[in-house]
Image (cartoon, rainbow, N blue to C red):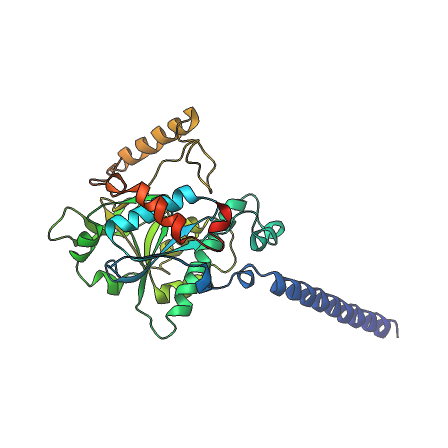
Length: 330
């Protein structure tokens, strides 16, 4: 009789424990599903796109160019417009998320503060929204390419011609093609330009997102694989490349370089002063590391597009055509 009583108590305990855990799981699952970061992000509405007119509609095999820019940074918007106007490229400036955006603020408390800065969460959301837009616009196409630029870059003025000089096969094999490699060690040689010194290599650790081409089905893959941000977006992509879940190429020497940040040109993601003593020490260590690994160092582009750009014309054009979210910050 005592055995039966203990047996019944054990069964009841297991039963109520199961009920408790089930309710707890469903409660947290319900809350997580409501607050899941990716549910806060939506594809870009056409009214938010700021179109830069250009007679050249493609770059390499990419038929769309998106430039991520904070509406509160008209200085960088001007440079982006001047860049595209000089190359006569059609492009769309898209609004970036800021740390004050509702979608970012609502997710702040669920962020791992040791591994993911709030600014990095905003950066993740900005790129994710462009990937969603690409996926939404290419539902029936798996091999459509788009370029994504951040607003703090300069481009080699011969970029369109250099991209055309590579074999078409690179566009059939890669998921991502980086114009700037951020000191990434060149992997296996994939292709050599028949007319220029530039080469396409396997990207080993592409820790940057300032200028890259992405295939439409790769955008869909990243939407799924990076739906829960846990670290900076470039580090997340490096991990996927390391795990052979993505095929990434990088171009050497780079066709795109980030502009140095300073007190007059602050970074919106990494709040650092590249003229400071600490940054200079970090830069020297990085240079030494590249020297040990025999990574070629590139301080500047061969032919800067921004040096030939007409910023006065770009400012006038911007002020004439800005409206909506863009005009409110002027």
